[in-house]
Length: 313
Image 1 (cartoon, rainbow, N blue to C red):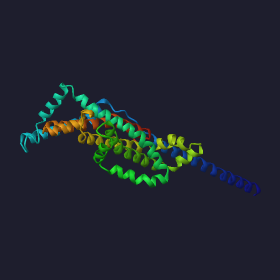
Image 2 (cartoon, one colour; image 1 turned 180 degrees about the vertical axis):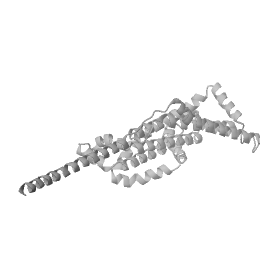
Image 3 (cartoon, rainbow, N blue to C red; image 1 turned 90 degrees about the vertical axis):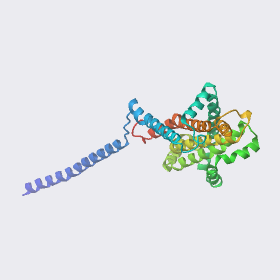
Image 4 (spheres, one colour; image 1 turned 60 degrees about the vertical axis):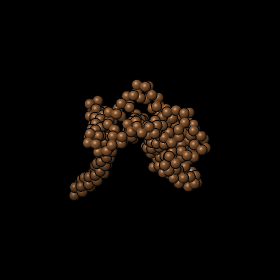
């Protein structure tokens, strides 16, 4: 009996020892499975788009859309839905473009406006970025000028042209002032919105590592707020371009040169509807080109670096 009892006790002890071991092994396997699942979720499958796919999905659709618009335009002209001087034939617009090119004026007109717009935007960037940082991080300044920035952003850019002309006269400084008043609030507000979305844990971790002040802004706030900041930059460029066109249309002087806005206004004064439509098309093309060539690649890179794009586009 004693031997039997001893054997039973030994078996019970072994069974009790094996249960925690199996439980620990099962828990470890569960943790490994969970980690593998999280790794799979975090992994971004980047697939490079082939040239054929780019042609089909990126290039062809806008070409088809333009062709449809021109076709509808041509049908309306042939159907004579309105007078010719109100809706000229697309061929007349093409002839106006060809004439500008042959006269060597097309590139000069476009570059006059583009150079102004880009230079003004860079100045707005240099002003709007630190302003956005200060507004986002200093509560008193945010309470004081935050609503003013939002109000300036909603104010039509054309409203700044008359006072700018009175203040500065008909010169490039007036043009840049209008651009700044239109673009700076958008850039600053975009950065403020991006910083507001930065998790507080990032800032606490940075302070733990000794990142404070400008170091924290450079290495933590700006990188973490990049998506909102880039959105603000895109909107800032849009406001820069719109402000510049408004200034060029209203302010007229030989010292200002001939830009797209002034070309548009000259054609209106000449009652040349084909030239007016050409001016509108050129303004639209430049705005789209800057968006596609500058801001779209930056936005894709920022989103891809954060795993927000499933494929390389």
